[in-house]
Length: 153
Image (cartoon, helix red, strand yellow):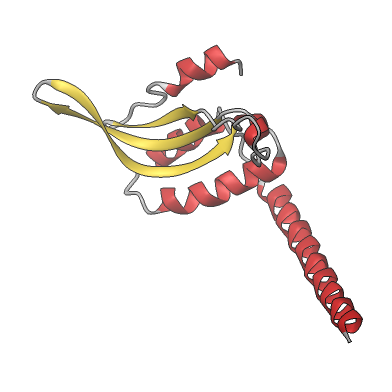
């Protein structure tokens, strides 16, 4: 999706019962000259997703944020880990909203246009693999600490 298409998509993606999904783009802070490079500053803009409710106040439309669903770096939104993390954060928040089954499905479709949903079996395999990776890292760190203690003696 090009930047222009995404910008058009950011406005009123899905209207139902006055509630809709809205994507906003946030520019990341740039690294100042002479300073250490910021982590993830080269990842481009960040996109964040909110469910908003349209209200009329004094005759003019206003948007009230109902729920913040999550954010994803624009450069990483096609990567498996970013998609799994985004949906793992968004689904529990959507579960807490009083939505009908149809509204929920439409919201999922609207979000899926920007951050593709990962099939359950693929997401489960990724989570398991990541957990095993972290367990190996913990074991390596403990070994590193033991070796450090031996050197100090």
